Image (tube, rainbow, N blue to C red; front, top):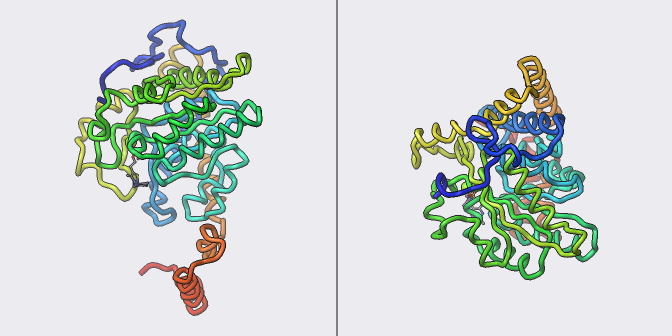
Length: 363
Ligand SMILES: Cc1ncc(C[n+]2csc(CCOP(=O)(O)OP(=O)(O)O)c2C)c(N)n1
Ligand SMILES: [Mg+2]
């Protein structure tokens, strides 16, 4: 199901427009920013995996392969629009700026999540589809307050099997909330293929059941993802009619790497499949488009890449200096800790008291 079927496309696999009229009207500067943000997302991925291998961050979920969907779609938003995302969708965060706070979260500092609010991004979501009712709530609040805001929620194909997805879609359809449901269908939910996830022909078709528009797009084509998201955002904002409408977008994409740094994909999929998808790489394709249209050359590309490396190195270094009180892990779930957690906290304090920083050293 993931490879075939119709979808919206602007650039073919060689970066040539399938229809010149369909190319979105974006400035050269914006097109180069999209390129830079996709490359930055990929480079951050590579650095983060290395940091995980060095024991400097915990488990990491790489976005490689999905940059076109995440970055392209986010360029269709206003800066004030809200984004909710799953652990693999940091391309959307990169568009709003990759900073040390964000990296520090991956290093285990809860405080790193807080800075996202300033960029109108909700905290990173790990509980699959839990954030979708929140996205609808946020967009309903925008509608009620008349602030013209749109909320975009990124999630995976696996999330569409959760009750939260269906409840959120239903509520959005009935209440006409300005919500864009952006499904990054990468064909797999850990080791579970999308064919076993749903019996629907596509994920986009599920929109019919909730009375909203459903769109299937080539998720390896950043301009197509921009285009369909812009149309969805316009439908959601629609100040002229005073009517807001939600949309479900299915971006057909692929994750090149493991589910997380704790996974070994060779146990459930063939390398050939990965190679096939790499031929459609969103960054290579977009780079070819930029070069062919005279917007990018070797010098500019080298400058962009050097800037990315410097930026990512600087935020990683700054994040490495962040310090957190380790007992804060007990602070954020309960107002009054239940007895079992109170006992754990006391035991933890005792260990810290006796061993200090050495309590965290590995053998
Ligand atoms: C509510 C819930 N159930 C199960 C899990 C375990 N889990 C972590 S990732 C994952 C697969 C999600 O797949 P998908 O939504 O397709 O996202 P992808 O990892 O492919 O980006 C599952 C089941 C979880 N995090 N939350
Ligand atoms: Mg998936």
